[in-house]
Image (tube, rainbow, N blue to C red; front, side, top):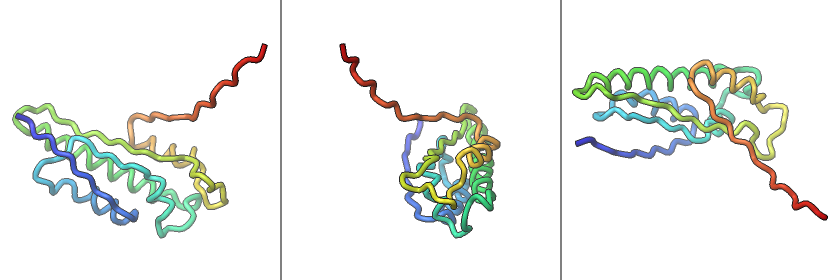
Length: 135
């Protein structure tokens, strides 16, 4: 019988996020999925200043997620069934509403850093409704 637990953790800062990710290996039952919703919120709210000058927080979080998932996958595969993998899902809003200031990180730069560590990218674009044709 498999154990299906869901644990939600709500952190407020980049530092708390990093601490929580780094401590996932200490859980009694390793997770098979790590979801970070709104990574942009943590990166733009960090103490590092304008992100265009320093991509290291982005790389640090992405590398930590990648390495943690790899380690947890190894733990899951060492179990009796050997079927476990730990996956990572990250949501990031590339253009925060109302924030087109000079301190915003160019989405292409951030996504290129995330692409180095995360294997798959899915993008969503808003579809504008078609206007009815007038005859």
